[in-house]
Image (cartoon, rainbow, N blue to C red; front, side):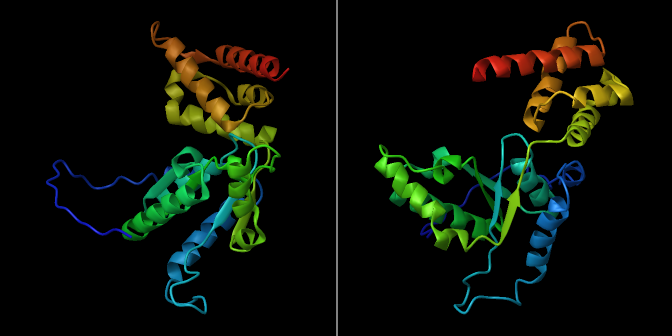
Length: 245
């Protein structure tokens, strides 16, 4: 609970520029994209209708997104928040703490702020709490038990599973990042996108490749070719395979 207040003089305030294109660029299989938005949109419309038997309990919604890295979980939250015109308060596992008491205090603080700001709360990369228990780390086991407990699972309103990107999804991701960076900076044809999509990379890796290619092209002010992108993609894939060997 917040118990104090203060006044500040703040200059250069501007209207928020919401990114309407973020949701359009979100690449998800099936109807998960529309399902996530429908939950949030209808929740905003039903704030005065459905409630729990206890007043003010059960009015929030919890969406659990799970799957491999780089497939759009964090971006889904960002895109939905942009489309909803609300702030997104993001917390990683490291910000939550390492003991049940610290986690509870951090969550209480975050939820209080989200209530004040009418914000969405994103708990990002909390895999450490959802992994299997071990025989050596008792403190972590206590945290894992809390998150895996059936009482917690029963409070989840929507489960959104994510899988590795298909070739079709990777093609869309490549195109989205190239469009965002500026098509005039690239020499990439539609057929080239099919070739790039054949390399098994996730969305975050594709984003990093676009960034790397752009940096390499700055000095000579040359356009980024498909050959350079493909070379970077293959090099990254070989490096990842070597690291996991």
